Image 1 (cartoon, rainbow, N blue to C red):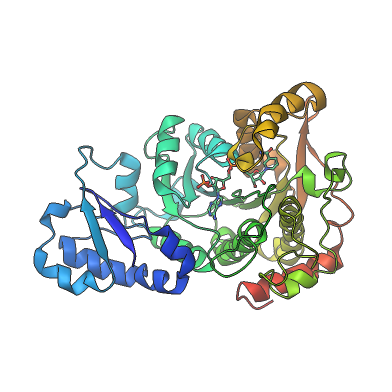
Image 2 (image 1 turned 90 degrees about the horizontal axis):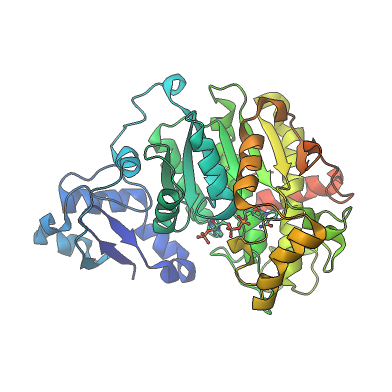
Length: 420
Ligand code: NDP
């Protein structure tokens, strides 16, 4: 069953285990119409519904008579009272048609940032919001973590909203896109930032759709997302729409860092062709290696940017770009690494390689790629140096292999259910 917890203004889905193990059943439970029905029945005045549902009426007002109607799909576990009303950002988010009533040209520019609940994404969200010119949609799998992080870092209420997105489920990606479109917000920038890194994993893990987790989350989830939101970007009123996918130096074998084993290599893409499933979890069809799976996924992200540039820049006017923000050695990305690595890596990067960059500085760099008119070159891969600031960097031979990238595109499109 799916487990939902109610507070005075909210219902939170907390049954993520069920979601992973039985995505079809769970997504049926979470389908907007069903939840909308349940919500409407329960509150009598359900507000606009997204994947994580919030009701404006206190749960105490749910008439007992509606419970049998919802019992087959929902288990209401608790009705914990919360004293505080929804924050301004949430109120803005859940007022029906609050944004849709404002013509797109009069709305603030909007950026969607995936994985904005920590690290680079959170700091880029902060930097954009601080300009007063952007509204940031934080696309996150952990709604409460994102809300707490946004408040803790001082993002002004109303400068952001949070929509649920779990990139390890294609159904969630589709649901996110539907929820975003339903807000009526314009879209000026899409930032694919979220990632998982499993350097110590002995065994592969898998997404709801059965893809190896790093490739499924970092590449395939974003691949579907960017394709589904391309039209929204094309129609951006700011006339400088951007799609940014965060890359990494570690995937680029033309650098020192990129030559630290295991090196990225997509090989003949035979593993991807067979679905990066339990039988063949690596894109190159070789034995599983968690660190390499991450590096491979970043190569795929950077190749996707180049393919999108080739395929769509001219017809849509969208600028596609990738970047390496520097080594942000203390972020949650390294959460699964060995303790000793986590202790030594930051000072090593600070004092030996000098590649270290703070989360705040990295966030400013990403915000620059999203919004600086000077960084509007499509197909570019941006990096920074202390002497030059931002500069266009060279990608590795593999990332620049357009024939391989075209094959990657076709296989990825097939896996996520898009026609190539
Ligand atoms: P963090 O772990 O702080 O951020 C990663 C974000 O991705 C988190 O918000 C996380 O959510 C989110 N995420 C993970 N899985 C999913 C999922 N299934 N669905 C939705 N969101 C998900 O790491 P960083 O800030 O360092 O990483 C951000 C980007 O920067 C990544 O693309 C990474 O590859 C890139 N990068 C990082 C470098 C570094 O040195 N740190 C260097 C080069 C590139 P949650 O909070 O719920 O876990």
